[in-house]
Length: 199
Image (cartoon, rainbow, N blue to C red; front, side, top):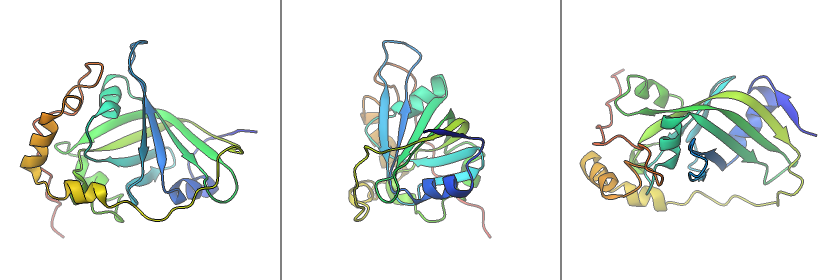
């Protein structure tokens, strides 16, 4: 039977932080709009900020549906599955916000991700999610899958870019500044990556 939690801590937090992949789901307000479901999996790119807040790094890609949906309505669900060990599925339903490079909070948020170097991944934003409903379910039908290693393809591809060429890449794609359904997506031109304070 599923259980509802008041906060992300203890066993629940440990489970979330140990998973190698998680999924995000968002949708526009328009009933005819496109629902988006995305896998996330660069090691170290997810963090529990506090018992009701989580965040993850939003890296370069060929669209920006999650960003567009969050800018329009803020609704998001995150999901983790146990592919090893006891079966479990955890969902965090909440409100999300993309924090972009030129936001004063951006550099401080990066401090929550000490285990990953975001520079070769074309970091666009930090997605911050405030939990409104936290639940788990059995996961009995989820298969066993093993983790081998992260793919290097993403960092190989975007590690060749600087801020100018990355911005040009984003501007060349049809579904980054504007979503599939015509919503505002990633704000362009891309601001430079802020320099962390010395010390």
